[in-house]
Length: 140
Image 1 (cartoon, one colour):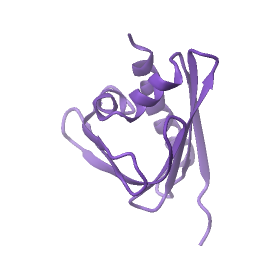
Image 2: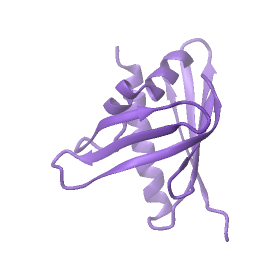
Image 3: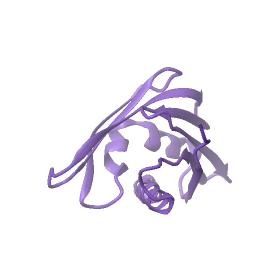
């Protein structure tokens, strides 16, 4: 078995690390940013942030033509700093938060690429979601 290629995305958010963490992990916030384009939405999310806990987000097209459940299980967690979860297909995702001064946070996600879609397509899609998070986290 070959090791999957790793893809890295990141964004610098104009918000303190505590705010960035909360808006990234709280289901009430996740539903407001967890989609790649304006024609998609995230109508529901749940997040049981503990080792063995489950993260679930429903992602769907606004016209209801397509949708899916994103489900993962936490394997590592350092509250306020980083977490790793494993998706149902066995791919791992690690997201870390690093304070830059008092009011900025760098959010970095490293994930195992899947083999069905082009790596650059995956990078662009995940980066679009992270960019939506950045906009949400910076909103007053």
